[in-house]
Image (cartoon, rainbow, N blue to C red; front, side):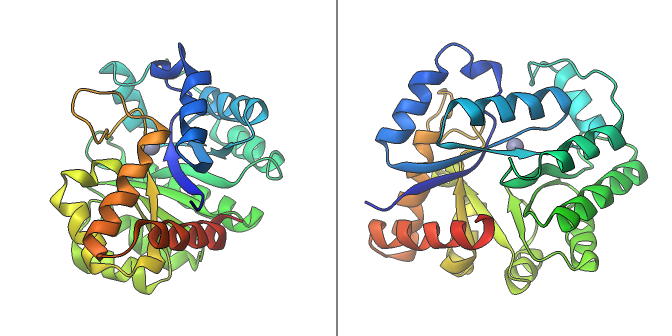
Length: 261
Ligand SMILES: [Zn+2]
């Protein structure tokens, strides 16, 4: 069986604090070759680096998430860490200093659903785009209710190595992303999300990747998501594309290598 990739998750989340060893173990047994864990601010960025030092399968992406959106998630108890005020420029310098330790810049992007201060968000995202370009790393992009602005900004930047994570935008934008040669990662909730099933249908396999966004977006109701479950995305893509699962996994792994390695 070819190597399977979870191209986006959050292993720093408190939901993994009790059994991270077993989570990693199950991922290896499920056939995963790489797990990309994403930091979103200083504390989680450092945890991501620590996890990568501890587990060979874990590759860290460091980012700065739309700050207000993150603050709201923390306030709503969706994210376990307190958001301490921090200096954006200092954190960008930290990421840059660790460029040889990381596989990507991210998670970064725009979130107009839970975050306000749109102009500030765009300024920060522009800095993250420039950072990715400067250190020559792929950019992992989050966009919520801000898909057009995200795609426009990326397009204007000329950045080539881009992964749109959990992309909920319309199909005109989906096609634009594919035409740009960027990638769309298919989360495990594709097993029931018609939106992602349609993306799989419409987008060429050469533009797709798989992710869990664990602990979120579980393929199983009422069950925490974890990297091993990314197999469910591969299975669903194979079903929709009417291809052999192994062949799909092979293609997806090639995509991962092209974008990230
Ligand atoms: Zn995420």
